[in-house]
Image (tube, rainbow, N blue to C red; front, side, top):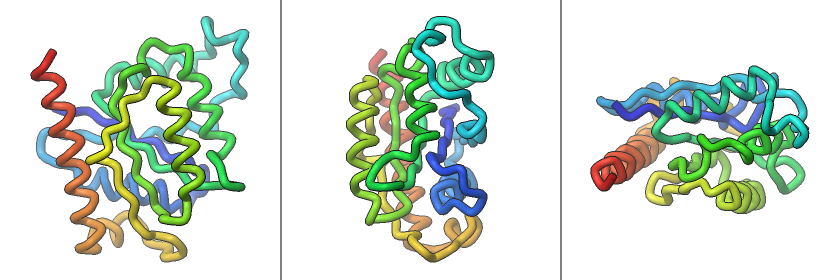
Length: 179
């Protein structure tokens, strides 16, 4: 079983990024489970003095990441960058031993979010994430206000998501065989 953690970089209730990740969960493949992480907004402000002895919610996030085989991330762009709350979550993972080398697939809900995607890639590469390019997709959900059911039902978007999940699962399975 391939276990994925889906993390939205948006705190909005009607976020297209979160809807895209929930659509991926609906479309998850046989032999795959996707769990949504919903506590990005609950994490305390990053404090490097607490990195070695973090709050319980941070410990729980790190442990959750340690139990997953890969991470799906969908992040919006705010002011040409990564939203502060999501960057805060990433900052808490920098000093962790669970995150380095973790496979990551980037799901982008807007072709216009290119600055945030570039910044996110730079941060993730700095954190030693393993970005799986064939599993990373951009779909155009901008201003469409679609929920996960509508996204999963759209034939073109459905195919993009399924193909990305197949690529991600295949990559993770291949890496497991090589170990």
